[in-house]
Length: 459
Ligand code: PXL
Image 1 (cartoon, rainbow, N blue to C red):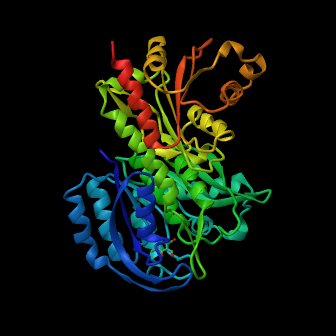
Image 2 (cartoon, rainbow, N blue to C red; image 1 turned 180 degrees about the horizontal axis):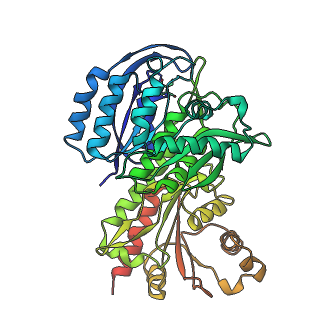
Image 3 (cartoon, rainbow, N blue to C red; image 1 turned 60 degrees about the vertical axis):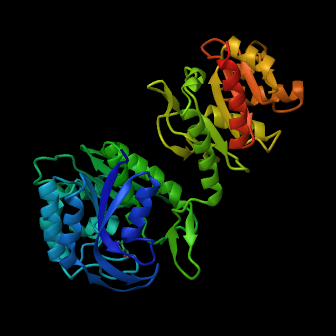
């Protein structure tokens, strides 16, 4: 079943922050996000004109989904007034929800997102029910009653002190769920580099931020981060793993800032058409094999992957594959995870190496080797195949990590002058023999797989 979670937040017509940013983030992480709207704001990515509270409409929104769906993880953002707090608190208690709270009371344009002095009510009623609190530094200082000029942002001790106070504020109640963490965004700065700090289980962990020109002041970054944590929790990660993954996700998105037509920046959570095409090609090949029981014979010990690259791929991040590879379940090939960029290693390096000689190569798969398979393919198909002899591999290459794939490609170019349809090898010390299939696109690979599966099925 697809994982699910919920965001309770304000609507932002610029779609950079609030409920829109939350849903887009959850979507991108592969989680279905339900959404309950606390307020409608009137704003662009850099100007805020006001909001209208929807606290009168909260109860029917919440009951419609809680009556139907087993929601456990919830992200809470903008809370406009006390009535909204009370309703949200009731639901958290009734459904024993796991809460990620992004304590936003001021918009990125500097305007209030709630009634004046709501913070004390939030602290009193909501904080004790929060599991993960995600303030930025000024919110952290506000709720810990520390003055900004009282702390040294480079000092771990000072940051630990501030986060300790916040931890105590979210700790008093909630006996059914004692897992509590505080992560302060952009808490510290050292040698001109910014870091977040996580205070969890009495230890402090730093996450260094990638700093990118033009990404500062991007609107809605906090919403994306807290939603990412919630989505990763919904996918079964524990608190620390979910935060680790949300940090990676955020850092990657932070390098892709969308400049809106006039003033204003938001994180770009869209998938480019080019990337979507690559994902679709992996899916097409996977669909083809997953319906064929016979294909299970071709899944190697190391398990199978299908790697497909962007046309101008330069590194592993430009190559999509199946996370966790393909294994066998109930006799059929079965994908362990989703199709994503940057998750394959061997097959990705083969594509990158092959592209140096032939830019049309975009897909590689690794199949189980059997002498019989190679014989049949050789005798009964028109596929062009080349044997790579591990015994001929110089020690220098063998001993250097990651260089075999480059060498294997270079050898085939030197001996046959091109990238063939298949390069196979007989294995070596601790190395499983493998048949590698190369192709230009999903159609080309599927045609080759059809030929292979037909001949190896024959007695
Ligand atoms: O980024 C904080 C935030 C959260 N939710 C809504 C917002 C903003 C910032 O402007 O508008 C609805």
